[in-house]
Image (tube, rainbow, N blue to C red; front, side, top):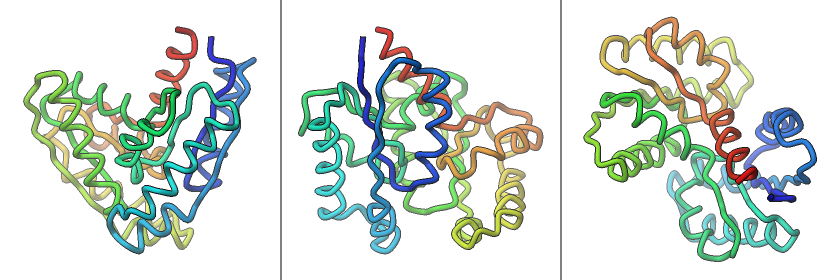
Length: 219
C-alpha cells in the first residue's frame, strides 16, 4: 500500500480544496503539498505552454519524488499536458487530476460538453477527452463553452457575476449533450445548478480524482 503521496498545485485554494477530502478518504496515508502559483500565472500571461513552464513543472514533480512521494498528483488541468513529460522524469506514478473525469465522460455519452472559463484550460481539457475517447475506441462529439469574462470575475473575487455568466453558458448546452465536464475546479460549486439547467450529469475533477487515487492506493 502507498504510504506517502505528494500533490503539486498551482494555487493555495486548490490545496485547501483537497485537504479535507484527503483527511476523510486517505486516513493513515502521509501527504504533502507543493504549491507554485507562478506556473499558472505564467501560463495565463503567455497563453501557451512554454519550455520554462514545463521545466518548472518537471522540477516540482522531481522534488515531490525526492521528498519521498510514492505517488504524485498534479491538480491543475491547465498544466496537465506537461504531466506526460514529467512522468518520464520520475520512477513513481504521476496522476492528472482530470483524467478520471475525462474517462467517465466518455463512458457516459457520445456528446460531451466541456465548460471552461480560462482559455488556457479549454484546449488541454478537450484534447484529454479526445485522447480518452480514442483509447476507448469511441467516436465523440465535443461541444465547448468558454466564458472568459467569468474568469476575469473569478480573479477579481466577484463570484456572483462569475456564477451568473457560467450558468448562462450552460443554457447553450441544453439539449445538445449527454454529459458535461467542468474543466476547472473553480467551477465545481456550480455542478448541481448546471445539472438542473441542462438535465444531464455534470462532472467535476477533484472528487473523481480522489476516487481514482483511493483505488490506486488500496491496490
